[in-house]
Image (cartoon, rainbow, N blue to C red; front, side, top):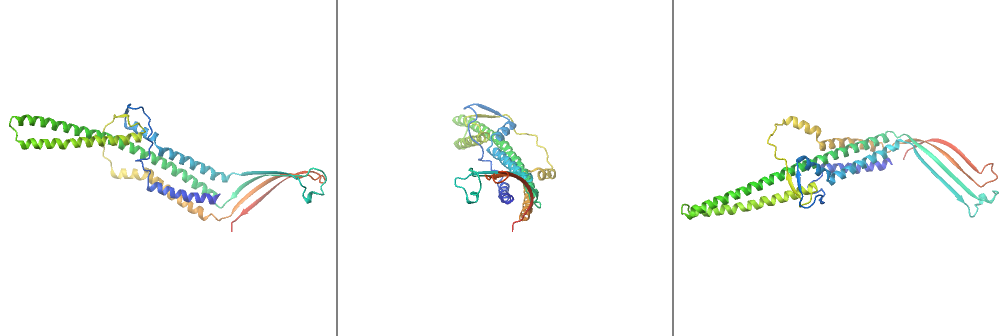
Amino acid sequence: MLKRYIIEAEIAMKRIILLIIFILPLSGGFAAFAAEKNGVSVPLTVEKAVELAVKNSEDMEISKKSIEKTKNRYREVHSLTYPQVSGQIGWQKYIKVPSYMESYPGEDKWKLGSQATITQLVWAFGKVSTAVEIAEKYMNIENLAYDLTKKEIESAAKKMYFTVIFAQEALKIAEESYENVLMNQKSLSARFSSGRVSRVDNVKMAADVAGRRPAVLKAKKGLELVLIDFKKLLNLDNASEITCEDYFNNDFKEISYDKYEKMLLENEPALKVMRESIKLTEKVTILKKRENLPELGAFASYDYGGVSDDALPKKIHNGIHGNCRLEYEI
């Protein structure tokens, strides 16, 4: 069982490395099922958007299942430290009597055999304790990966929220600019009809109006695309109308680079995953070195059985015996 666990540890290590290199792509990994009625207005704050994104994320559910998987693996490995109980029972009814039973008196020819065994691993030269430590490291890594996934989703939700506000403001500015240039064109046309403006100025104004219209269409299309991605992230129906209640914060606080760098190095989940992965690699290396060491175990058995031999004092007999066993693979 320990050998199988070592193989699983090596496979999991490769998975963790891939997790660190490709940190959970979020752009297309979220559910897009309809969650709101068509046309309903959805007022959103930043906190509400983050809450919906985390709640409806498939990556969060996958991470939860991974944590549960590592917990089950820990229980499996830790069970090696407990006594192992096994039992077997067999009963045979002979249609044709074997030659060694032909001398037995009586008509019934049967054989009963049963055994209950309890085995306890006494010492495995550190293999079991190291395997338990590895299982604990796996749980730590998966918990950190869960935190990392959550923070990535929260970050994506916040970025998308303010991207929507930015796109709305860009469209608003483009539309106001277009309306202003139309008013200027109308005023210039009135002056041109009275002969106070040259034809060249009128042509320039017409060109300016023609140039502003594509900017409005581009801003409108950009807002539509951002809203589609945002609704997909929050698991909202495309027909829902989103109203962003928060706005850009005008109070920008100064941040000390050294302080920020220290906080980042101490609290960044990706770095924590890397540190735990290094520790895990060290433990796996130790377990590999101890792989071929012997195992010392003790066991006790209770036997109960007999045959249809009337010549014996009792047909049924039982017994208890115990032993120690040292196993070493050559």
